[in-house]
Length: 451
Image 1 (tube, rainbow, N blue to C red):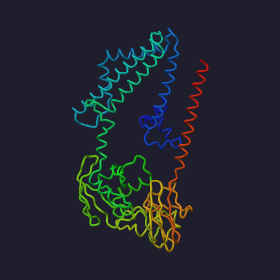
Image 2 (image 1 turned 90 degrees about the vertical axis):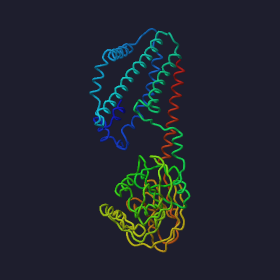
Image 3 (image 1 turned 45 degrees about the vertical axis):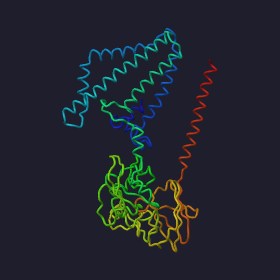
Image 4 (image 1 turned 120 degrees about the vertical axis):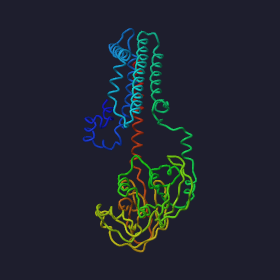
């Protein structure tokens, strides 16, 4: 019950605000409704306990709760039959005002709401009647224990199926949209198109920049294409802040810094810094659209050396990197906390880059101390850096990416993703599963021994 009340969020702020303000890590939930997983789990467990208790009911002895439940729903039935007009009037007045001023639309929406409420009220009566009837027959021993349990489980399955169908396959008259898509629709959405095929043929490591309304398009990742846009429900704060403060990475200088080589646009891009290299069709969330591909001139690679590092405060840094004359190939900006790394550096050479999902290796050579900029998101909590196998510090550079001070000579710089927390989670889950199975086994053994 507590989890259910918490899930209401601001609509029951007395409970939610208390947990949000007092309990550690509670504010990490993305939405309050996520806690409903506890309700779902506990409902199944309580249902199992309830079924076990019902199976132990004594013959010919009707418990008091049975009559209370039957009486309550009996009154409900009378109200539905005799007071339908009063119920309709009360519900119509309590409905929130739809976001439309069209009186016909308001009337249609409220009628749809009333129809949903009425049908659900009658369905509750039907399921309760079937359940109480089955329990009555079991108490009177008109059916066997096995039949009793099978019928109750079947009633529960029918109820869940009825609700599930409204979500998965709603009728046209319900006013609902389906929560799922047909397989053929999904398959068609992920079929390669001319634009995707062109981009996949390009060599080397690069990112793409979807222009305008395409910026939130996540379809590119399904084909192994790296986009600076797209959607993710749990972005790193660093990334989210950068996208917001730079207006979706809208300057060409920042695009260069992010290793963007191609711009994908539904409209013409009239800037001399880009060349149109392909014109074709691309499937989007709004259908198949004529799309243009532009190549960004002088785009930076995934890693490069710069000649100067300057320390700036946040107030100074954001305006500087948002300027169109910002030159990420020559200068890097770091936080004042890391000012020991400021100064002039010798530009070295990036000889080779090897990368996979959880690993990045960069072979470098520099005559004097150099500052290597890596166009990957700065996340030192998990991405650990080493130089020739020795731990090295990663510096937040240009408010988003990584920087590493490289000593003179030839070196191998490696970034390795630390999966220790994930591995600990797997270990804890495995141990918990073994303990749970052991407790279940012990309970079954104890019960069989008593009987």
